[in-house]
Every structure is written in structure tokens, then in C-alpha cells.
Amino acid sequence: MICIEDVWKAYDTLVAVREVSLQLEQGRTLGLIGPNGAGKTTLLRMLATLAKPDRGKIEIAGMDARRHARDIRRCISFMPAEFGSPPDMTMREYMRYFASLSGIPKRERDAGIDQAFALTELTGRDEVMVRSLSTGNRQRLLLAKTLINDPHLLILDEPSSGLDPRARVEVREILQELAGMGKTIVISSHILADLEEICSDICIMEAGRMVLGGSIEELHRNFTRAHKLVRLRVPAEDTATAQAQLEALGDVITCEIENGWVIAASALDNCNFILRELLDRDIQVLELQEDKPDLEDMFIHSTAGEVT
Image (cartoon, rainbow, N blue to C red):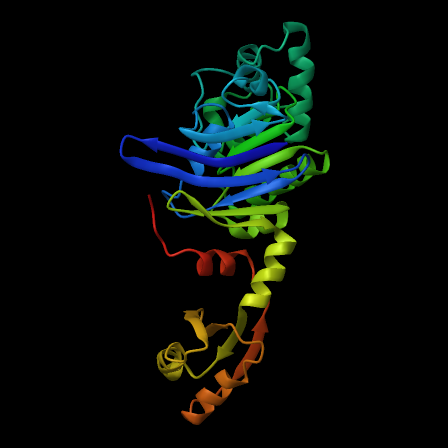
């Protein structure tokens, strides 16, 4: 469905995206992760044919994004991070407005709107004014608008931004349903726990480059082989000392404190040396766990906090 080969994009002297290559098959869901300024939105805009790469190639459904942008736009839809709407419109009027912009024949618009409202659980709210919507329902409406042309590919920039936990769960369930329908989805988000539940594939970006990418299963497998995570609880007064002692060990890659836990990453399969080090220093270990790395661990250990 998507093929990106050695793509670069610069704005004056700022290189926003550099050397990015990835592929995504039809029906897969790609999570795009990175710190602010990593180039995620620029890459999404190029996928949506709203910007052209300076170098490299983007193909969507076998069509070159440079030469066939109009044809590509008929089978994709883009949901931006910011909500913009014409004033004084009901939800039905808002959807009709964007249906007309999408070139959907007038006789087909209401049926498409009904279907989009059903998928986003907005049925029965046609006459509600857009300006009166809560943040959660605004995001639902944006998602409904994104579905109006029944796209094969959905490109979503921070769809859960600003939502409360309940609304986040609701949006996540909608995206899971769409993925189950065979839609291809590219989604940028800072909420890594949501992406881990939704996505089949992950691309981590930093300073415009892709630093880690592949299927969730593949990344878990490779990361687990490369990094052994050990979570220890020690007396509160010894936490900082334990961190300093473990950071000084050559076989410890990183050591951080999180919610009172000391979390150490090592390249060695056997992490008994971590326990031995603390006991030799007369630091009592109250609890010890071996952690399976999650998406947040992969992100933290793959990036250095750089921006473009």
C-alpha cells in the first residue's frame, strides 16, 4: 500500500525529513513516534500529498505521489492535529461541506455521512452545533469527516490529543474497528500505550531520520535480545546511590528511576551481576523483576532527544 524510498524534505536550511525508507502493506496500522520536531508531521503531509519530497520516492497503492496526487487523494484521507471548522454549522452541515469538497456526488453524501456517524458513534447528533462540541466529540467529528470518502488509507496526526482517558479509549476502539475492516492506517501519537494496542508496525523518528522500524512483534523480539530490563525496589534513601552504582557498571546500558523503581537495561542475558553489585554495596533489594520491554522502553533507548 505504501512504499517510501530514501525520502528527504527541507524547508530552507531546515532538513525536516532525511533518508526515510519504509513499506506498509494493505490492512496494516503504522504508528509514527518521535519527539517534537522529529519530522513526523512533515512525513504525514507528504503521504497525504500536501507536500512533495525534495528527493526520494513515495508510492501509495502503486501510484507515484508526485505524478498522481489527484488520483491518490481519492483513496486516502488526512486528519490533521488541529480542529478547524467553518462557523455556525451543525454536524450534518459540516459533513456535507467536506463531502462536497471531496467530490462526493450529492445523491451519495447523506448515506456516506450516516455510515461515518455510525462508525464514530455520532448517530442522532446531526443538528448539534459544531462550536458546542466537547473536545472528545470534536475529535470524533474530525474522524467522521476523515471517513466520508470511505478511504483505503487513513493518515491521522495526533487523533487523541487533548482527550480525557475515557475519550481516548473510545477513539482507540474506533481505530481498532477500522483496522478490523481492512483499512490501512498511519497514525502519529505521543500516547505510546495506545499505539501499542492499535498498531501492527512502528516507525520511531528522531531529527528527521527513522531510527527504528518494523512490526511490533519483530521489534519486541529484537529489543528483548538486545536489552534485558531489570526493575528493582530498594529503600527510598538508597535509590539515588543504587542508580549511581549501576550506571558505573560497564554492562549496564542505562539506569533510570521511575515511580520509586530503579530500572536498569543490560545487554547481558544474565543480570545477576546487578543484584550482586547492590548487595556488595550493602544496599538492600526489596523486590526484583525482569521486565518485558514496551514501546516506551524502545522509544527511550532508541532516541537521544534530538530535534531537527
